[in-house]
Length: 171
Image 1 (tube, helix red, strand yellow):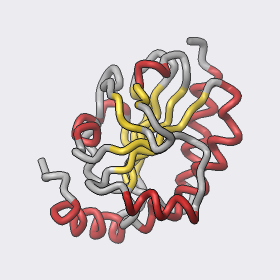
Image 2: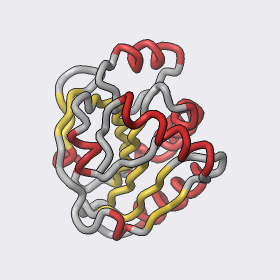
Image 3: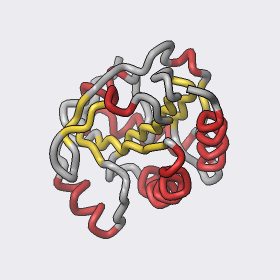
């Protein structure tokens, strides 16, 4: 597996982002229960995935050096605003070793959903993140149901369709 460092992953991610459209992978890409994690939050404290059972959770792995990530972030905010009152939450997991860049960038692109910092890339390794952005959608029972690698315009429509379908499911 590739080392998840900024220098080692950047060329691979950029090449993948330029050459390939966003791809939705079947849930089998990360089978079974979503791996648990707890990460420091931009707003302070820690956020643990286990504390969100009973909600549909979209986990978006991103970095400031990723152009598609930057384009996607305002669209994720729209999805969050639309569905947050229906048992849905969104966690943006920044994968950079130094979160100062993310802090600076988010001042110009504010979001209201939790932003978490995976500075050691432990959670991104758990989720087999190999491209930026990568998005995992987890159902109310804590099962990974959808995985997306990359972003192209229109991918947010797939996110919305999948989130809506999971919100409608009985817990």
